[in-house]
Length: 116
Image (cartoon, rainbow, N blue to C red; front, side, top):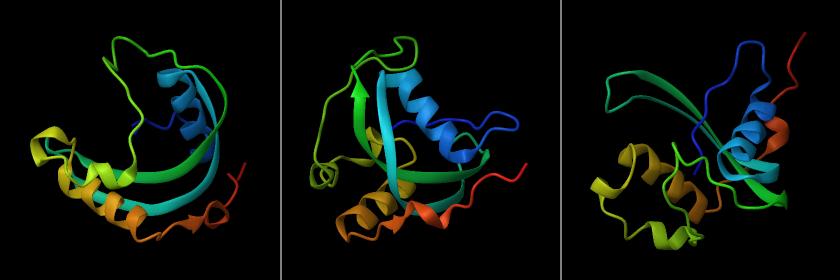
C-alpha cells in the first residue's frame, strides 16, 4: 500500500498513479475504490485517506530506498493475520482489508474529473 500526498492543483487520481510510480516503479490503472477514510493519525494529524484499487500495467520494481526498505506481494486475506504493531494506522488498514475481503469495491467513476 502506497501512501501519498496530493500536490497543489493536482488531480487525486493522477496523484495516486504518480505516487505509485515514484515509490515502486510500477505503472497502474486505477479500477476502483473502497472509499474515503477520515481519521486522526497516530501522530495526531487529521487525515483524509482515499483508498484506490489498481492493476499493474507496466514498469518494474524500483523502490524509493529512503521511503521503502522492502516489498513483497501478498494476498489480501494474508493481511488479516498481521498484528496491529505491524500495520501503519491499524484501525484504518483493517477497515480497508475488510472492505476488500467483502468485495466492497466501488467503481472509479465515483470520482469526478478535476474541475479547472
